[in-house]
Image (cartoon, rainbow, N blue to C red; front, side):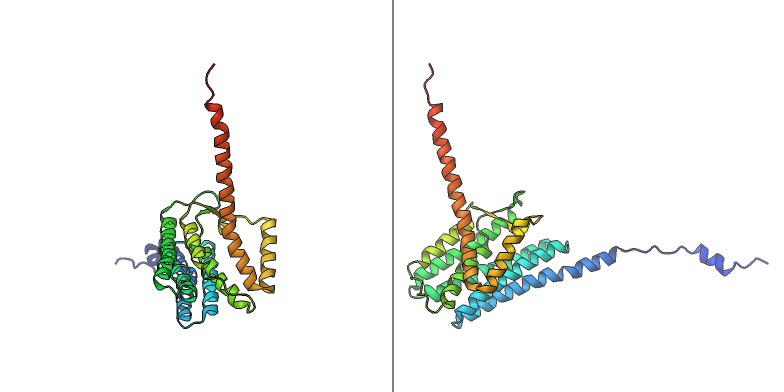
Length: 271
């Protein structure tokens, strides 16, 4: 009679399944991606709500909603890098949200607030801003990221900030005179041009290390925001736009000066 194997022998003969931890990593990564995508969705929601407030004549609230969308736009990028869940889907969703919040929303705000008296001209100027914003986003998506910490062209959130803070600064200070209507088209057109230009702007969020000077600047900015948010945001956004434009003009001027300075030396006749 054959011997019956013991239970322990049977257990040893059955191979034990290996523990695979990869699905757990995928689970965590998949759920972590909800955080930046949620911020991007809030960005889009604020942009849409700003359009609704503009249509109801709540221009001050509409301007603040654009700036709130700006905050969510900063947070979604930070969270995506911190959690290492950057994806093509998130980048495309961010571009679509930015076009609404920082392209359509501020253009509609400026058109309704300042340019409604001349509808054809106002529609053309505000449409130029939206189109240039879309071109800026498309160029950013297809252009390889530069190794230098710069943006080529004014980022569309900064362009939207210029139009939003202009409205907020005017409405927040009741004794401040209304901005002349003739100035508004130039502001919108110049801002649109800066977005599609090759003017370089510092990409502060791309810096891998934060220096002591930058920490001090951020601390001073936070204090100024607490003391007087409208004026601080106005001068910060406009100063950022003028910073890149001024340095670009100085750089081009120096380059032309050096070129003309070398030109007479190359044209000297041979002896």
